[in-house]
Structure formats: C-alpha cells, structure tokens
Length: 253
Image (cartoon, rainbow, N blue to C red):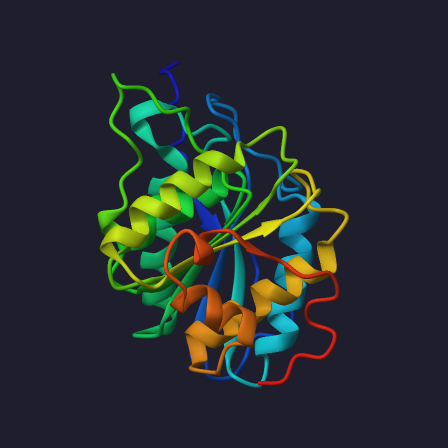
C-alpha cells in the first residue's frame, strides 16, 4: 500500500457572527491569541472569551451598516519564528474577505498573539485599520530586527493594553506605538489602568472602545471624543491615553 500524503493545512474563516448582512460593506476579522512556538492546530474553541465577546459586540453594532464579522481559524497555534504563521493566516483572511465580499474595507482586530498578527499583516491593500488588544510582542534585542511598522502607513491603528498585564509587556506595545506614530499620525494607544492580560475588570469599557473604533474606521462614523483626542494628540499623550471607567455608557456620535 502506498503512503497517504499528509493533508495540507489551511486557514479558514469561521461562520459569520450573527446574521450576515444581505449587502456587506465592511469586514472585521478577529484574530485570537496563540503561542510563541507550536505546530499544533488550534481547536475549534481556541478563540478566548474576549474574542468571542468582541465578535458579538461588533456584529450587533455594525448590523445596520453591513458589517460582516469572522473569527480567523489558524493553521497552527504558534507564531513559529520567521515563519510568522499567524500573520500569514491574517493576510490570507484579508484575501478571502476580498474574494467573498469584493472591494470593501477590512479591519484586523487581534488579541494577544493575534494582536501581533494584526499589526504585521496590516499592510494588506484591503486593510484600512488595525486594532491590537494586549498584543504579544517579542522582547527587544539588538541582534533581532524590531517589529516592522512601515506597513501601517495609511491605516488607522489603535492599541489597547492593561497596565498590569503580566503575559504581554505593555511597555513593548508603547514602544511599538511610538515608532509607528513617527511614520503614521493615525496611531493611538489606550492604557487600561490596573487591569491584567484578560482585561476582565474593565471588559465592557474595552468592548465599547473597540466598537467605537472599528465601526468608525469602517463606515466613517465620527469617533467619540476620547478616541479623536487620542488620534490627534502628540506622543506620548496619545499613546498613553487612559481608558476611563464607564466609557461607552453615554457615547454620543
């Protein structure tokens, strides 16, 4: 008997969250976290609670605007060094969104290692915005090139990070944001004071902030005053913008 070929792994988009609009006018691709190194395939339940909650929030908020929201299912759990598998899968997902929906704007929204993937794949021509929540970023090393930022030129970028995050260093995301701001004025970063990696303490505020940004960038809605101020403020002010308790309870667009 001949040996069977090993099946080629492929990334895929999960089923659209909520009712899919008849006419899709924008796409949010949700990128879950992952591991630094792993060749295992993520399970169907790999997306964490924050990703699922974000998906439901965005689907409700953008339904009338024609927003399609999908979770990206990776080929591997790991970033895996120079292979950058999660970033490659994010790029594939943007291609797939164009294939399915045509010339519509895409927002890459990632959590943890998915935040790194969103930032790295942000140069895709269909992507107009990137949201990175508690992004995992590599430690800075003089022997290793820093994370690239030039691909973010022309995109609106928001980073959100808890100041007590013990898994992903918030100082690293600040430094990346500072470098990105030098080549792209449309970068902001919010700090969630005293919250950790899962952002459980201020979960609702983080979700409202994400909704404000994503729906704004995809459909041209006006941002809330804090988001607009953060985008316009010079560094470091716009990169250390505190997320106020209760944000989103009385937003007026």
